[in-house]
Image 1 (cartoon, rainbow over the protein chains, first blue to last red):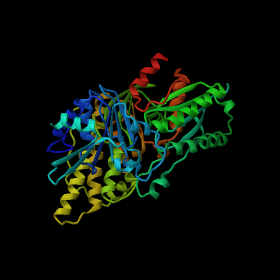
Image 2: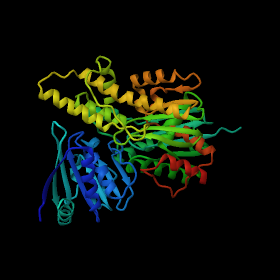
Image 3: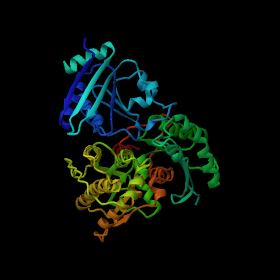
Image 4: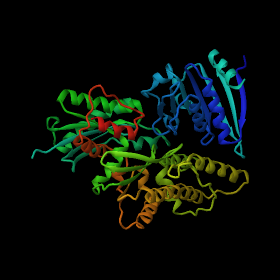
Length: 153
Length: 344
């Protein structure tokens, strides 16, 4: 099975749709790691994903509180490690990374590398000068590869 | 009449804090274990979110608050604490401390919503008049709240993505200004002009906010300047961003005053310390002679336990009670907290 896929989006709406389709295809616990610069569209993508999970509440950036939780068809834990650069002990939410109950999305995962599970869907986004986003997806794990196929064909 | 003493604990995010309030008015002590020096030491953004740090601080802030107030635990009438929203690990420490004290000393527990605390902090400056319109702006919040009466909250506007303080911090970072970004941009903006074009935000609900697009626009604009080999005027960019962001807030306030005709407008949260925002609020509020407005001093704006004590005092008087089975609620909603009161 293919482990890597790439797609591009040219608007916020398109990014939301790709996220939503991923969410619709999720039926078991999974960790999604989102790599990309400030303003690349990570939170926007997660908003779409949440919609696909049947979450009706507004998904806002978790940067300040580090973690936000939402109830849906599948629960969503949205973690943003942006402010954790340099922190390396006792976060108080390790269990959400070790054994996710639903979907755990992590933005800026490089700042909590030692807590990340081996199996995950890794998504890296880059924005070019016109604002076109390129999304590279890497599936680590069998279930993740299966999910990637369901999502992007 | 016997004095009524409230002990308040706040640990929803970066700060561990404890305060003692007498008879709802006299703040006897207000201890905050602020770690801002740790943040700047790492050149960025290291928060005191690690639960262990809260654990280390909590006993210290509680005993310091009691000592400074010259109050014994036996004299306390109720313990109030922030139940949410916030980071679960951080909240846990404060909630557990409150419940332990409540259990050992047989004191009633009063859970409080963090935002209610921010709004009630204004009571240290002026009595609240209803209907009231509150703007809560901080690193984690951007909200317009209408209150028809004590502890009746309606969120009429909120951000769709980033909080305003977060947008400030992130823009400051890409401009190379360091942390915390709010005061740095505020200061630098005074030396600049709003010459860089940035988009105006449109939201479906005219009272809602969105700052993510503005943040991206600043980043894209910086990229363009670099590609063209132009020289960035950092002060002008700081000013352009600040004007775009704060005029958005000003417009929402204007609209909300128009719709809700409040008797009192209050500002709250750390970003309420921004000098340009204070200026814009003053200009806007001065137009409404029949409406009073409060822009609190800095100590009232940032996270502390004094504000939880104030809100907790009212909640205590209104009969709000928690019990030993209540845990922290990281996603606690202000409006459901309000409804909780009616069941109390």
